[in-house]
Image 1 (tube, rainbow, N blue to C red):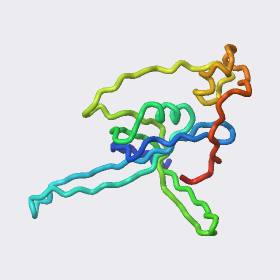
Image 2: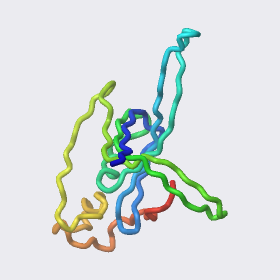
Image 3: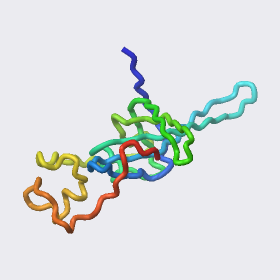
Image 4: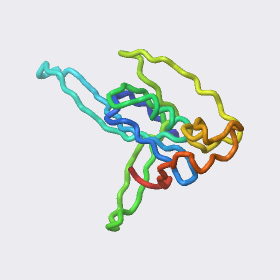
Length: 162
């Protein structure tokens, strides 16, 4: 069986960008810079190479990442490589290879973290963003439909490239 699992450690190049699909599924995109540094034995100088990766997180992990991480934070990401292709409005073909995250964690090499567990919601909460579930408009029943005063979501199609 072929496996394309990848683990990268690097710094976030921007704050996570959280959006929601039309079905209410959370999607966060983050950029990571991975530095590699080595000593050039011929010149006795340090050399460096930087690689940039886009990481896509889904569902509750997307919400957790957007609430917990910010530009500059050092993170550890494990996931799989995935290639997507699309056509621009100008009818040009584009493609991108990105990491679809299975796990995202702060690196504790030069930092500390405080973990806050998030309790699982009621059965009717699936697919509803946390800020809507936690709002007074959602109702005391946990799975009740929100009222018309609930905050609007920003929707993005699941296939839209970032």
